[in-house]
Image 1 (tube, rainbow over the protein chains, first blue to last red):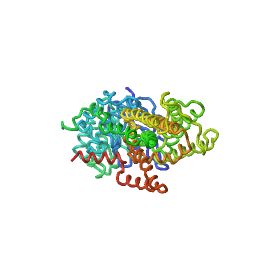
Image 2 (image 1 turned 120 degrees about the vertical axis):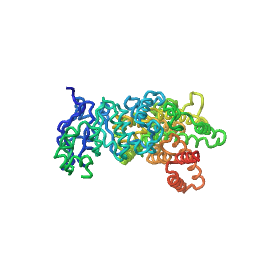
Image 3 (image 1 turned 60 degrees about the vertical axis):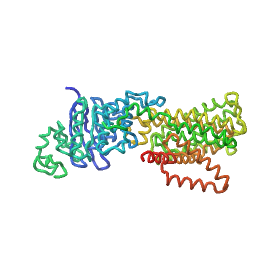
Length: 259
Length: 329
């Protein structure tokens, strides 16, 4: 069996007396689509922050393709293929969509160090950026300033920015947060359509989407991994149901907030 | 597919961004007007060109990379003293003087950039301010070298290119300052439209996101801080060479503050902001100090308050907004 694309060993973090992550052990095999669920404040985003290096863990190690990346700064983890998106849009408001993605592509190809040649000497970078936007159906908005784009398009731009770095492992923090239901279906269809070389872990509250798009689910509660398993196992697990305050699998399907 | 702006070919769009606009050509032709219309104001014109170059260098870090500095005069002063000392001790050739001054300012810029790149916002203001004050005091205490309060005397600038002497009317001085400004403007314009320039705008727009797309922001900041220091050094050297004197206020706090005012007045992050700002600020100062010698700062203050209230993005920002609204009608 080949090494997992991403793995954590005994990952822990606390702020003072508040434990936000304790002894987290997860493995993402190559190419999977996993979901990370749990009530608000369970530590899901914290886990992404720890894995991507935005936070330093108190203990534990993180492995990308079997090599220990625990000590690497965030941008070097990105260069090695561990990339995230943000729950709340974190974009470049006064850049156009095309400029934003070209920027990310240039950082990857290291053209971004070049200050003595103009951008038009880099047609490959620009074409690649345009292709990414077209693939996510943002081609027609590519010359619009980010801040003038529709909210749903901005959510897609979040993913486009991550794709421009050519990720091996993609961590999506509520990619459909704030997007109307019909649009979030489309958004997840786009995620499902990503190359199977990319390993995906996504945080999502809408259980219908989780059950539709994830092959395996990791449940977090209070900074711990409560359980991991196939969707049907999770849906029928009494512990998970207790956390979600529901009694029937149907309740889980309707999401935690209605519990 | 929708037509109009949405169907522009991505390559063409970026080429379009770098194309020279008619207003730019008019602007640079207008810089020659002082020779025809105001031959008595050529020394003021040189001052404007030098201030514009200094503001351009600040625009690179403040306007494009979002690094707020209240100590940028440090590099201006280092350039001025380097060129001045070089000339005083026997080498008055102006062009090589500029190169040495740029190098000296660049070395100090590079050294300090390792600290600068670790901080943002308020901490950065304090840091640059402190560093500027430190250097000013150092220059003051090294009186044997810098001349201290009396300024650096005994500078003699040789003929430009070995043929054009720096005359009393400032004809050669303005041509020299303007030519250097233009060449470094071309350099800056190219830099802004490079992939690196795009990264700088990324740093300004969203510093936190940059590492998440794999960008080495700190390395980018070190590069641009060093380049900006070099250009500020050239501006300082120009002042030393054309006025043949260097005083302590060339690296004082007031000059650091003044260049921020000039840039904000013209419009930061707009390439021409520092140029327009320097022109308006120095002409206003010249006129006000002629009309009301004691109170001219009062009028400068009114000008600043008015610009910030009515044109929050500077004069060029307001102009851009106006033309955008006008062309939409």
